Image 1 (cartoon, one colour):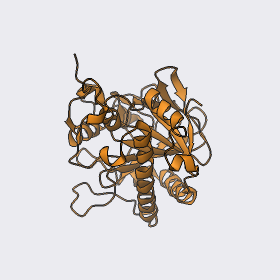
Image 2 (cartoon, rainbow, N blue to C red):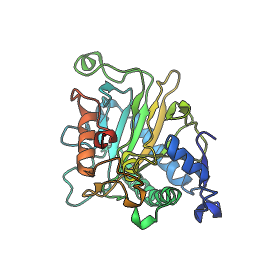
Image 3 (cartoon, rainbow, N blue to C red):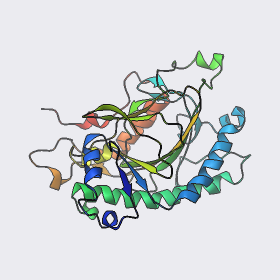
Length: 316
């Protein structure tokens, strides 16, 4: 399959048998996407879906009451930019609460059970993300303790709703970038891996180096995994950060929920020494620098395309 399916109940997969991970390895080298099944999280996902659907069905003024700002990147937002073009989507972002965090989560007052459902989803996905990252590391051929670990304290979850029509009013549209030609324009995720659940609508595509744009089809009960910039840099270009996009919705809306598994706040991203055959492809860079620039790029048009891992590539 162009986007392989990895069965987590398969003993060969759990034991990281190279033959069982062969298709995963090939996909990570070509486009950076694969699917996992038999993960055991169906109930947790269904509960999250129900609360997410209710949230996006609330009156817009209630969602705007917890709107993101330049200094508060958590909460609701409906005018995000990718590649300097406005996406046709609404989002709600949250992280694991931290006592010393200056970036507090915002929760809707009218939905008292919403926070507990999302917190439970967050913690459950954090455990699965560590397990899946270990599979990726084993497929790459590096000892798990030697590769850059993820940190649930710097990761985040996003609820995505892709409407058919622009949610902004005429007056609001006059003060923001116009919509582009995609529901979500092509980009890579900055972290290590992303765990994504999507509904049955479809529209997600990834760019294969061998085939061009290919569909990442909905598969009931599956969770999509895609690689981020940090893995591409740390693998010294052996694995590819997934370039992906979402096509515009034409006759039905779409919902998806990515969990972004990120490095520790003070992590320095650099090619792993065991993966440097002749020379390093990327220079070392701070995770804080990359994620800060991506947050700024998504919030406002800075006059340049959003920061990608190629910014840190060593050019001949």
